[in-house]
Image 1 (cartoon, rainbow, N blue to C red):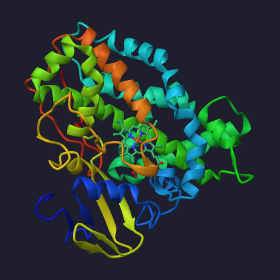
Image 2 (image 1 turned 30 degrees about the vertical axis):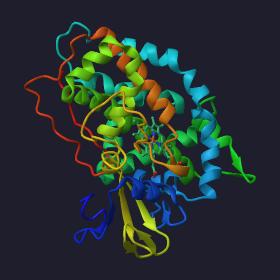
Image 3 (image 1 turned 60 degrees about the vertical axis):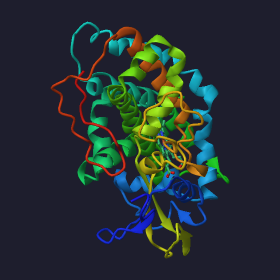
Image 4 (image 1 turned 120 degrees about the vertical axis):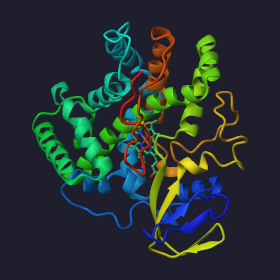
Length: 355
Ligand code: HEM
């Protein structure tokens, strides 16, 4: 498709699909032509609360809202979390070390990012178990889980209004834009976006990296012998098995792209996963090469919506995979494992990963 119809309208869904690197980059970053805001529903549940969050807002409102959370995610702020991340990695790996077999996702790649983001938000540890269910519900579009999650955060916001702490939620409640506080819908949007974004994506980055090593065992041997290859390994994993495969926009005007005219108001899906395998940008795109330079993958998006959590995801992956290489030598995906893909057009990964 990328070669033959790089921009096409899928007759079944009516969605315009964009596959090539340059066109995907433009679709993600040219917010005047491709809106993140148009046509998003508003309402009470978690799914619709997301439509009030920065990921579904265009400039200038987007810039204002994003500035409120940016402070919590600067590379410097994020670096300060390293000792705590290392401690969590240690706590999660200790019980499984020497156990012979584990589900890499259930026992490690899922709990790590969810605990980190829950601590940033200031969510009680005891409530974390429900998050997996809820964030899966948001990703797969299940309305009852989304409603539950919305109700949970609405209660938490009320609680923090009455009794603020030094967590991010309390900070957002206190914040003002042009003299006005965020409304409950906007606060809900932030909480749910951060939780879902912090949950599904980093989990899949970790698990997908193991699958990359399975595809390219020599790359695994090389990084074990030379840890300076780890940052390149993480970037290549993001390119080769992108945890977020596609992003949605709506054409805000008639747009010429790839020799086609996308009419104003059309829904558009930018295929990040395809862009990241475009041979025009990445020579031998089907080869997993941790030493690939340059590696300008679009796994974290591009432009004003570039992933806010990228420094955090990279740090978590670096601490986690370093510890895995140190403490679980000869880690292998179980031969009898049947790998079931997560049923989503957006999120790319497997449901369980026995190793
Ligand atoms: C935005 C991917 C981890 C928070 C994005 C976008 C992508 C992405 C592709 C762009 C969306 C768009 O253009 O519409 C990923 C991947 C991750 C990851 C692959 C892990 C490997 C995280 C983490 C957090 C996070 C850990 C939170 C702590 C966000 C937020 C946005 C975003 C808040 C919206 C930014 C905006 O609209 O201005 N992410 N993400 N992400 N991500 Fe991530």
